[in-house]
Length: 418
Ligand SMILES: C[S@@+](CC[C@H](N)C(=O)[O-])C[C@H]1O[C@@H](n2cnc3c(N)ncnc32)[C@H](O)[C@@H]1O
Image (cartoon, rainbow, N blue to C red; front, side, top):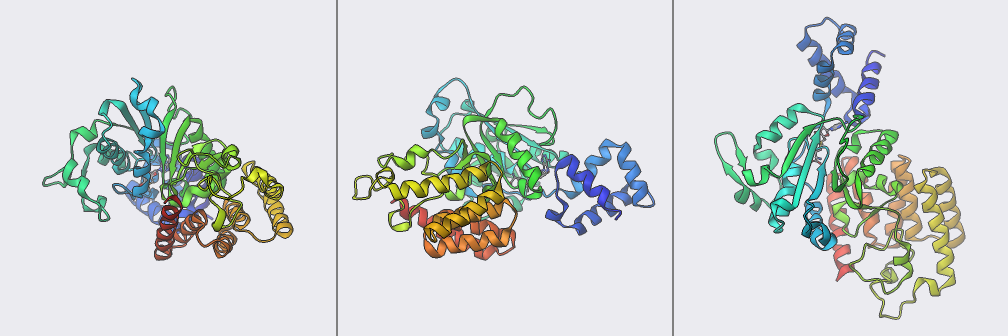
């Protein structure tokens, strides 16, 4: 198969799993590059590619998906500006908050971060954004910072009047925002990526992992978490959140933000009924159905703390074990134990949700979707199951279904918080 070697080369250099963009796109890219280089056939182009690093970069340019827009998944930016509560030390100190946007594509994401922080009243000297992408062409657009209509989507566009001036080329971004972002070109997998840089308080790595196969995704998440400060937050795309659960990263209580903090779930928060609501969230899976799921919220009600109930403790221990196995990447063992748990304890939303996450991580999308649906049947307000199912529907192209579920998840979270 003549294309196989190109696929292998792209996976090796940039991590791309060709199935994520489809083989026809690779075929088109190769035809275009072959024509551009004036060589007779793919074998001749392959030889040329071996000898020319610039040509390798050109081929990469023709297979990347630079799709992005300002304030994509707005909730992420809304959650990020809560950081004054989350990291008062950083905002008040002389050390600016360090933020990484990788991949930044044509700049809309890092500039949105800057606008959100400036709008929240964070002084410009208190934060610095590094923005990295593999594509020199995208970075050129980012540095020009003049955008067309496609970069502005959705109904919340008031930021455009505040930060852009319309000229003949398009909407030109103000210098105030531009100077907050430092762009550089690099491959996420470059051996010298961010060498010598201090860890980041916030990392945005959104809509990149979906183009990798499972082992490459794991390698990428490992690389990024090594660059995340211990109390840092990592934001990923909607379809990428299930993967995070397998990396000792715990979702924070803002479902549509897809934000994760370092470390395993904080078990003490589950056990301590009086844990304040503003502390990092109670970890998933939740062990109880909706009616009494919010143990920590109902501290002053009649709900019993989990550690006063031996049966709950037993369930907790088993599901914790399932989770531990999953965290260690032992997905089949985790799935088997979870099944055993369901047989012993009966069906529960928490168990089916966890089973869904495991199937998701093992790339068994249909089985994962079935489990999330079962979790939702048992607990219709299970926001995490809705969020994960929405991500799967999105991958399958059911955008309307995904949007509906995301709205339900948002309502469910708001109801839980009120
Ligand atoms: C869909 S865009 C995502 C942009 C932005 N993060 C967002 O969510 O809107 C994907 C970007 O990943 C970049 N990319 C692909 N592989 C990469 C790699 N190995 N290292 C760095 N950037 C990469 C592409 O150039 C492209 O700009």
